[in-house]
Image 1 (cartoon, rainbow, N blue to C red):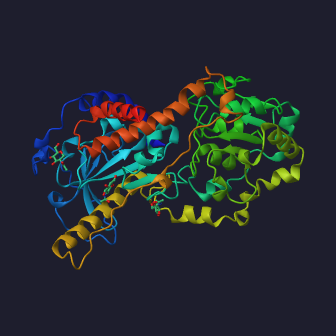
Image 2 (tube, rainbow, N blue to C red; image 1 turned 90 degrees about the horizontal axis):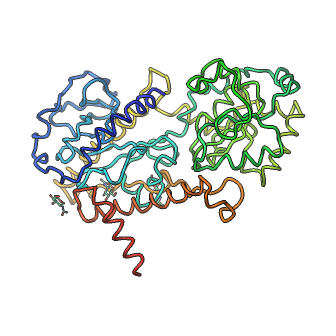
Length: 480
Ligand SMILES: *[C@@H]1O[C@H](CO)[C@@H](O)[C@H](O)[C@H]1NC(C)=O
Ligand SMILES: *[C@@H]1O[C@H](CO)[C@@H](O)[C@H](O)[C@H]1NC(C)=O
Ligand SMILES: *[C@@H]1O[C@H](CO)[C@@H](O)[C@H](O)[C@H]1NC(C)=O
């Protein structure tokens, strides 16, 4: 996705840019003067789309401001500030952090992957809401998986269906993507099998991830032949023409033809969370291969029908899974049942069909907004509604009740503590890479979430004091 490429490119610049901003200096409150913070902002006058319900005629200077704290994701170009005319109302959006404390800055938008407690915009002002955009893996920031972390946000766009602006099917471009005819017929796949190709493909170069997938696959390999091409558990070289790793990903045609020869693809996400599903699931289905999947525990809610993927969680052990796959490998008619969804009438899951139809954002679809602009407008319309309701309440408190507060909760992310994919944690070698990394990372993220809550509670203006707050909490904990 273009957004991700830009994100990676910006990461280096971003770090250079953030370091000076995140120093120990107290926040400059002179920026809190009306207009002063806005003087060196460029106002691009754009005649952007105005939704049919948008009758907002206010000038730029009167609009609420939404600040993209994660400036590298600012979904406008060029310029740092734009007016957006959304479905029902308009806002100014900017990535200029000088407006952080401005009275018109009503909401701050964060990208989950680079949200850091020690760089949070403080003091947190009572008139400002926080909005979280996080479509990437839960492993990128476990702070958001803890109650105290996620409850800092008022609006969310995450992979979970319970989020305010759900991105659950973000990796599935369209229904046609699923319906694409099988690229290698079963007959051909069977002759590849006879020629020595394994039934199962594994291709993974990102090892030691929270889902601990390699530990499971290593065990599975004892019972069934797996061709493994990536850096993790490699047992086969890639052909020369694919060795360039930039080719061996994504939708490159030669890559696709190479992997489509396999009947089964191990499709294991790097982090586990309800509704977190990526191209690892949808791409084999696009090609007409059967995914052996683990990632979202509720994946069954989104599959085209009841038999379109093999779910790891349905098997008591890797050995049982291996036996199931071998049986299926030898039974053509049962194997073909797994591809029945290629016929539209066999897609019986209404949640999937409606989810694809009703989402307002598109993927590679110029007629629809992308989800960054979509979420930005979602926040803009909600903020204008809130401001209007608050104004009415101030004028006529008897007639209009105070608007209800809105806060995210653990159903908006809430990914579980990483646990071993096979075996029990007590029996894992203390030097194991996974063990040394992930359970700790998860609990340290909870400390950081609580530390940030404490900073906000104490109305601190320097996020760098996070470590003192965490330290104090630890001391209190130990003295109890
Ligand atoms: C936003 O969330 C915070 C909690 O993190 C809460 O204190 C505040 O009242 C919420 N704001 C609105 C407008 O609901
Ligand atoms: C969590 O938030 C959702 C709204 O996003 C709400 O419907 C639900 O009741 C909340 N759950 C809890 C336990 O507060
Ligand atoms: C929080 O601190 C800021 C300055 O850092 C101050 O202007 C504001 O009044 C404080 N708010 C509360 C509730 O103490």
